[in-house]
Image (tube, rainbow, N blue to C red; front, side):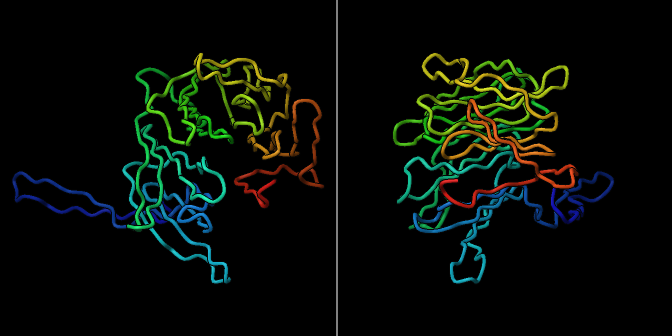
Length: 287
């Protein structure tokens, strides 16, 4: 999974006629699969956290203009599937890092300033014995008000991990049924009285829609959200939740801002050529 093809060599562990070989990798993974910015090592720090398959790197962003300064390079038992910033305490407190692996394990990580190491605040297994893994891969969504976080890993199911008032994750996780079988992306909306999920999905006729759901943690179910279902461009591929409410829908020819009623769309390319979005990042905290 790295940018450099790993080399493998074998070491015979016994002499003929019976011989066993031990295969090892000579290079660490070098391809970046996920990257986020957070105040991970301190409330006033700016860190770049990079996931490279089975390793997690933490860098400090130097304000003097010297660039990145490597701090930590931690091996992980599993390949990173999702990586998100969990900020339950707001400004003035260090951020936490939530990640899940391809084998359906999750961990909530924090930085211990005294030891200078990464510690695990919560961990668990969110796999199910039944269910078809979704074709789009795992998708993690964190409620902006830190009431819960969710994982989409299997078709027709959404895994909910509730959080306590202090931001600590509960030990209980549960599934809720989703009508959308071919889900492309999802995110939680900001500024809603109840956790509200926006989904981008495709039906059997290859038409794509934007839909919202409200999450009832006590009832362990999804209900219809505040927005009506609307059709979007056939090439729509990503959702970006806005900090002041609403969501951006990215497609090959436009970026549309949906807020439940009015829709504002802007053409991406003046020439009309299709645009493929690979990554995005927020410039200002208020969006």
